[in-house]
Image 1 (cartoon, rainbow, N blue to C red):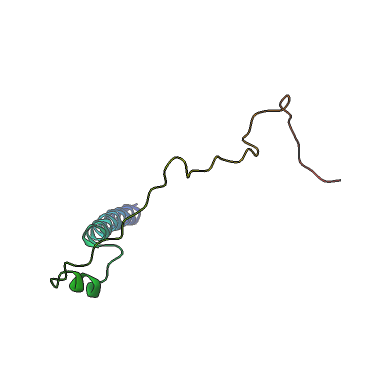
Image 2: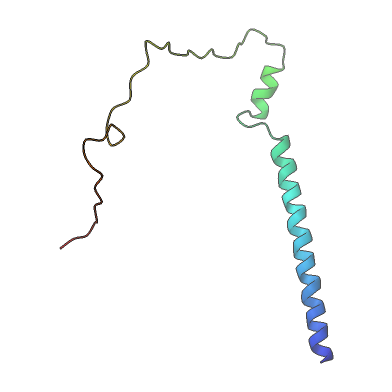
Length: 91
């Protein structure tokens, strides 16, 4: 009976330790993600901060409503008859 109690206590300590380690690892990954700057390398960041103010970010063009296309009427178009249930299968 004493061996069983020690085994439970050891398992409990192991479970708590794994939980604490997992929580700490999540915290480390959260800090790494928060401090990273996606899409920029250190070289690109250094060249941007070197005083070169002539580079501007590329401007995006937004299409006017006249340039937009209407969606095609495929399976999402207006219904042409009563609803039909189709059961798949092969002969």
